[in-house]
Image (tube, rainbow, N blue to C red; front, top):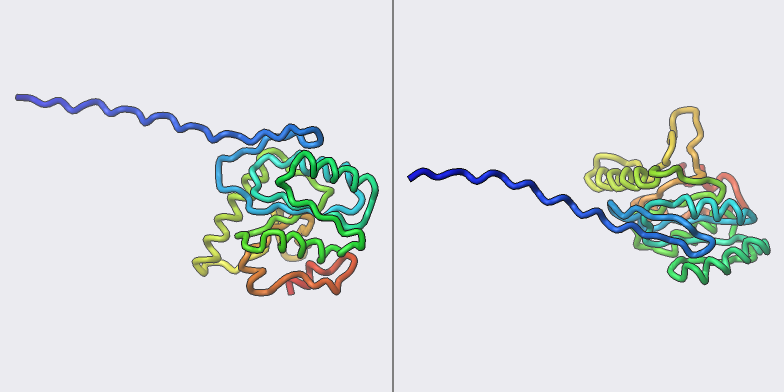
Length: 203
């Protein structure tokens, strides 16, 4: 009796992960979910309500916690944040009329999710090009693995050129790993209202 080998069957095509559509009024964007989510993306805003909205609409990769810290009491920012509170009740939006300063705002982002594997902290005056946030997030996840294996000690990561010799690290957007916060602590609020809190942390 002869036996024939059955022809191999093709693997079924993978089902694409659903995308998260945010279309609530101020926010009109779609988040890719194909990969591990960003635990926290935080931003501090002082007076740039329009630039804040531009930044938020440039997010195209899923984030577990969006954290917005309002330093001061600019009326247009306050109005925008009230709308965002109503449209995005899952977001963490905190207002500090006394102005915590840059370091204080960054600490507030860290405190909003102290158990997160990492936090991405951004200025309000940038915007992410399509696809860059996902690539950044995947790169951070890879770096976490290297740190956990003892193969790297880089615990603050930048999406652009990083600290290359004479070039200044782009603190306008950075990811800080939990390892850094657990080892070094938070940012020094004695640097108020702004400047040099970042370089102090590097030292």
